[in-house]
Image 1 (cartoon, one colour):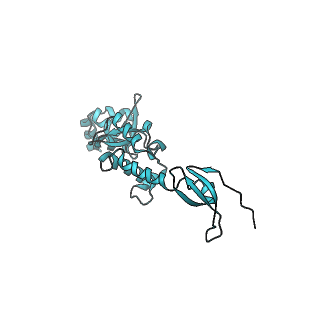
Image 2: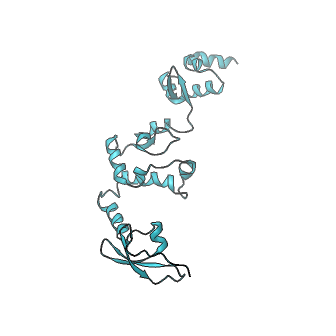
Image 3: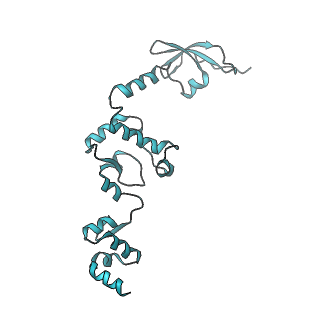
Length: 216
């Protein structure tokens, strides 16, 4: 029979091994442990060595209690925003997962593990209940450096399927350029579809363009 390494006196998280306990029903070694909180428990060797168990259960209870009591924001819109953000990046059953977690979009560890970190960032960066969280680079994840609070119009302009155009060193969506140059969006789309160069798209008067089209 293989010799079992003696874990007596060793610490694993909040647990200190006191002595051997009876093996489990599969013959696996288990140990009597004392937790820093004063409770005693029996833990398998594999769970101790792997770090799967680090306390008698008090740490989990403490975390669950604090997560709901310390900030008192469980039912706020911002807390829901935080949960939804994590859900679409981590939960394959979420209806939006394919467009987020399914293509590699992640929530940074700083926000993933601590709501208050997310809350502090939100309050310092213009959060209001009328705004939604928006990633500046839609191909990168949720983190302080890549997020902002945006209204519906800004969110729309930042979609992955938007057509971005650079002109004189500035980059805007087709919709934004149409507003800047006061050219109807439908005309901008037609010009782009017809393969016009950007200079012609933005500087051809609408009336002249429509007259030209009519003569074709």
